[in-house]
Length: 224
Image (tube, rainbow, N blue to C red; front, side):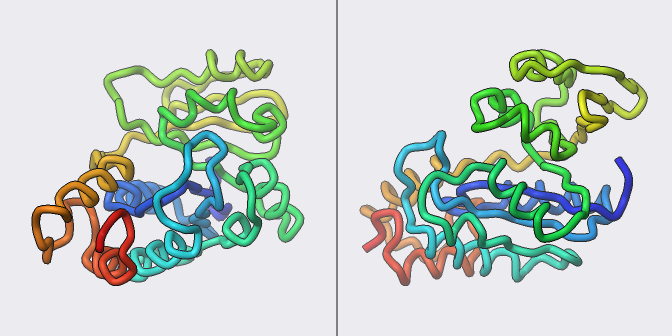
């Protein structure tokens, strides 16, 4: 994967947690991105109703990323500002209209496996390169099954650098990182449950203090 291109990492961030930040941090160590876009969704079309409003999730993300010392890390508000289901294809098309810079979509391996369910997945893969972050490195990375499900043919494989090339001369590369196994769903449940029994002064494990203070001040996730 060549240098000086833009990365795209999307999610609901409901709430943002240290697992998200570790991914951004580790990927940034390996690639000197021209811009690393973090993209909060207005509504993930594959998830049920979110716990916090789009504006609250954006604010938590802003507070969280302020503490990271990563050059060229930016929040893209395109999806947040467009009510309705957030489709990565639409956002990528928007970014490419703004600039001709090459885009790399950053996904966890479990998200990549679900890519065939995405809106316009085949078209999306013709517009971007993909960096798959391996959170289960014991399982050999092989994107060919996913490519087949979106009717794309894998053309070449460089086993030395775990890179696959496919239709349209795009690449799919994998990167192993050290994982912090936090889940936004589990954190929401923990906050809603424990707050009923304890005055939680300290943040739940996995949540930054600035984000936790915002959650308490705004009574998010059943906090009263």
